[in-house]
Image (cartoon, rainbow over all chains, first blue to last red):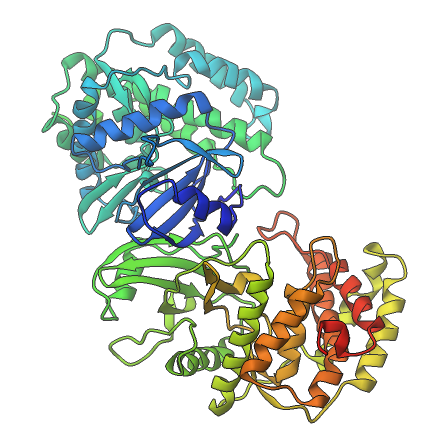
Length: 320
Length: 320
């Protein structure tokens, strides 16, 4: 649940008057989303999303994110298109925060993941990777292997509150990942946070990808590893090999993975599990009492990490 | 901020399939609203509000509220119109809660009240009172004078935590109100909660009244007294006589108040202040830590009550 910044009717009228969108008909704060304040804006021209960027998003990264969405939308990827005002700018300020209007995408994110969702997701992810290949801006992934130790250091003294012995286990795993993390994989633009609530469907068809505010430049196969963790485990913790196979084959129909990318998937999936484990652990230990957003359970990702640690190779993900 | 009940994409598809609204395009939880879970529903036919009624609304009252909105909308009042399904029903269940779809009203509620808002509000309130005059259902106002003592009893032992001596002051005031509360005033359908966030404007024109879930049968002038408190005090606590005059003259252009209604306005306004003071006091003393909804300050209404206690007559509200 998240609307952190209130916007007055007068402020929004003056803001929207800078665009060719006609009069404001309505503005409703959206209860979803964790990082930013999002509003559904209806004007005489249609529906849009108005986002006020809150403190967890670095203002200096916003031009990257907006240019990326514009780039991908121009290449046919169903993602929010930043709307430019009459002055040509898409990024301006509202109620003291950086703010942008983007196009509205129809669809709903799936609450209960079914195999077809994973097949569609794999294909859309590959199309996004191809569409990003000629995007000329770069943004380092500060939540990749180099960012994990600072996160771990910030949480390790209290990690035992979540699970006795967790700090020691994470220290061992982190040392392994730091020594084995691969270089030289095909790189490019990755979404880096493609969880089910960032993927819209209309019926069985994927209708949009949203929330590019973790997007960065990194190994493309790492994006797949994130999706394996986010989409292919059941609520009871079991790995669903059918979903993984559909995701990977869906991906490979659009962009074929190299032998090296395939063989490194288990390692990348361990790393991706570490990344979400560490940010969730930090958020759990540091969330203010009474905050709107309920912290997520980091131990889900500890279980996933251990799953990937014991797999023999990419065959465990349903590949022949 | 309020979405208390989560709804899955599959559940909403099946729910909306019972209406002639076409396919679901999108469903977004709305961050406003305190009592119920509200979603902005977009279908092939347009925009709607989907409401899931939470525990603070008595299920047995829902037919009254929905019939009332239908009655008012049919008489040209800009209010949400409950949409009936193919089976003729407007009220059904979704995700374990009673649920209804109503029409979407354009406009935004005013964050900073200006005099023209009060003039428009007065006229709209009077039109609503006239439109309700032939509504044939009744619902007692359980938050009128008879409901105040139980609320007071539930809070009085801890009222001093909010203001030393408050319990004694409220006891005296409550005894006065119980002895002097008038009978025999013109009665009918009242909204009973017409705060600025329940009134939409497009520019300077009032475009809709929403949230009829406190509506009941009571003295029409009591509805005006509620609005005097909700609209005519400045953020610094000062009473704005210009706003009150515009509200009352706006009202009287549509429905003239009797001499008795006018002379009783100060008493009704004291009672209305008591009602909101007591519910806010109760909520403040009993809200769970970490609740989504920040409790409002009851003492704002203590100051308003004392203002009305010292006025000589309706002339204090800007009437000649």
